[in-house]
Length: 342
Image (cartoon, rainbow, N blue to C red; front, side, top):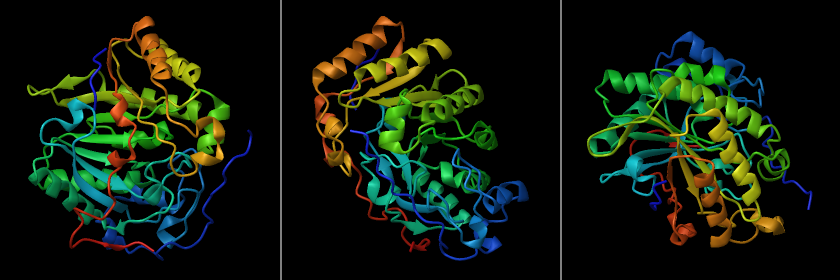
C-alpha cells in the first residue's frame, strides 16, 4: 500500500417535486440524441427512480432540472497523486445530489443547489477550457444526475479536440444500465464506497440500499475500464480508484467494505482510504459522528487493508482533517457561460 497523502433519528430533507427552470428548449441540449433525451423525460437515472419529466421543469429527489448545473470548474491539486499530478485535475463540480449525507462538505451545492445552469454545448466548452489550462484530466464531480448531458458534452468536446482522460467522480449510488451509456467515454472511475451497513447508509445518507446499489455500479465500472494504466509521468489514464471515507466509530464497517473489495475485485484494485472526515453540515445532530476520526481508528482500518492482501492504495495524513480543503464554490471557470440557477 502506498501511504501517500494527499440515536435513530434521520434527517429527511427531500426536495419537493416542483418546477425547476421551466421547460427546456432542445437547442440547450445540443442536439442530444433521443435515447439520451428520453432518460430525462421520465427520469430513472439512479436508484431513486423518481420518474419526473425534467424536460418539463419537474424535479425529483435530487432537485436537478434538465440543464447541468455547475458551481466550480478549476484545477484541483488535492486528489490522489495519480489524478492531480503536477498540473492539477480539471474538476467540474456539479450541483445537486441523489444522497443526503449529513456530513457533506459540499452541502452548499449538493443540498443547496447553488450553481449556474449551462447548456450542454457550454459544458463542453468548460471541459475544453480546463484542458487549455493544462489539466491532466477532466474530473466530473457528482455527475450522476446529469449523466445524459455529461455523456453528450464529452462527445461534443472530443469532436472539438479534447484528448485528455475523463474521470467520473461519483458517490456510486447509480444504476449499471445508466452507467452503460458512458462506456467508451469515461477513462477513469473514481467511485465512493461509503458504507456496508444498511443502518449507517439510511441514517447518514437516506439510502438504506446504498451498499447493494453501489457495489453493482462499481462492478459495472470495473467491467468498462479494466486494470489501471498510467502515463509515463504517473497519471492514471484508465482504471478505477475506489474511495472510502472512514467515519468515527465505524472502523468495523470500514473493514467490511474492504473485505467486499478484496472478495469481488482483483487484489491490485486501487483503494483510497481517507481520514479527512470533519463533522460539518448536520453532523452535530448525530453525537456518534460529531467528532474527528482518531489516528488509532484510522490505523486499524489501514492494518486491515494490508492483512487481507489488498495491494494498491492511498492514505491521508492527519492534516487532511481540515475544512479548509473544501473548495470555494464561487463559479470560477464559468465566466461568460450559463445563468445563475434559481
